[in-house]
Length: 236
Image (tube, rainbow, N blue to C red; front, side):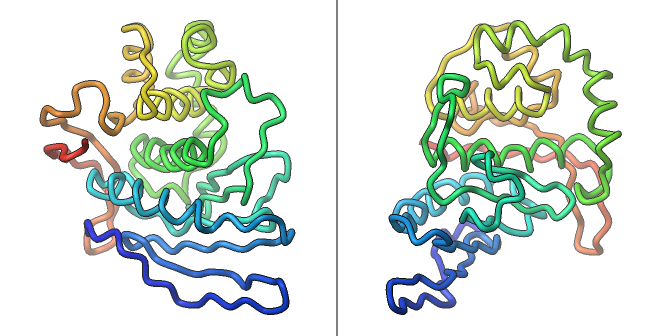
């Protein structure tokens, strides 16, 4: 479970073309392809995946994740740096994420995009008593109203990022990523974040203490249920 070793299935280089790399880290299938034959970035993505996926895994934050696909050809929206498809339970990320308005986000690095999209999976799977693939857009929208997000927008815009004020899912993803990357926020943001169902940030907000997280988990019989997980962080 905690093994971060990568088992590469295939890597072939043929006439300046890199065939898709298919690997597995912490049980999550990884696909990478240099669709546009640009500067190859697998050597940049690989250490990030090896560093962060074990940390997510030991907290049960990537349970049920069906894959991470890195490459522009995997993207459904070419203008997006990354996407979490909750119906397919797959994370999709640009090979070389580009930000038209970088100041709108808390960062513009590959590490940030990986953290941001991965916590979308963690967050969405913690909010409903069923698998992410069965959650409808209407249910996600209704939850935003239930959480009174409109009343919180200004605080996220002021203290976290403009993108964090878009909706409650982006507010959680931006705040989690910011805390993990070393940003500090006022107590009102922590209060909002907790009320929005955000998972405890890795290495942040007193994670050195034992923390209880209520996550949607699937048991060995394939039945999804709420259960309480208590872990002791080993994060640096």
